Length: 223
Image 1 (tube, one colour):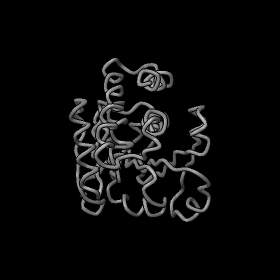
Image 2 (cartoon, one colour; image 1 turned 90 degrees about the horizontal axis):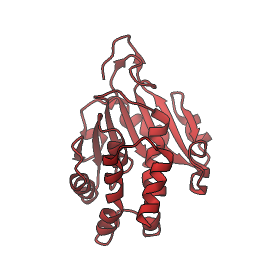
Image 3 (cartoon, one colour; image 1 turned 90 degrees about the vertical axis):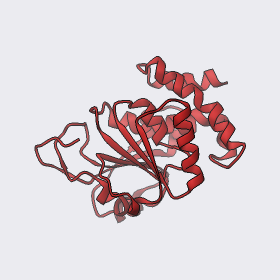
């Protein structure tokens, strides 16, 4: 079962290194262990960790494409480490800051990151108002409405950069269902991408990546 699940990552991302694949492979056992102690992810999802959590998180990577070394990313409301940990495995050249209001979930994410040998992640127990750093991107998964997310993270986006990466600094979040009202209520334009364009599993039929650019280019790269 574990090999089959890990293979789904290799299927969609055939270029991942052996080290990445080894780290992905360790996640099932680690999350199963933690889930037996506290409710990190839905019990119904424990047998579908790689599709519904790992691959889902990597939908952001499919959208963003290659990222320049040193690109900084905050995972707002990371919970037990999604999407931050899968993305940190996939982008070892980038730095990730995982933040959540629930201390026990941050402890889970930190423990798992340490046990798979991730060195490009930091952690914070708190909310976005308590984080005073700026990042190239803020990522999130189903934490709050799009309008609320934009308001919460706008101050954490780097103010100026050029096109060092495919997309300018902003918010990249994972959402599901009909987002027309959320997008209409957001004061800045948003791009909506169907994850079914990337992944064929039925789980992704209603799942989406939403990107909101929150910084304009200045002509000077500031990753």
